[in-house]
Length: 100
Image (cartoon, rainbow, N blue to C red; front, side, top):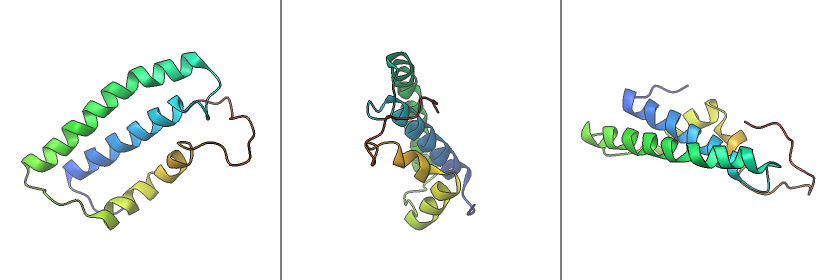
């Protein structure tokens, strides 16, 4: 994992949490309405945490997002696995019933 400031770490954690919730809401990736509903409800809190983390970066005069560093951190946190769940399944099969 690349070295991140405290605020950058919070942004990455919050962003991954948002991705996790969005992937659980994706109707092409979930089979249960209750699971999707709970994820959508939790998404509001996760989005607030992301907003707060970005606000903290801004307040600390961290005005620039270092894309390569953040991309490496996202990869380390397995964000690419979550990004994959945001789109429809490629093979046309039913999504796994296991919720994130």
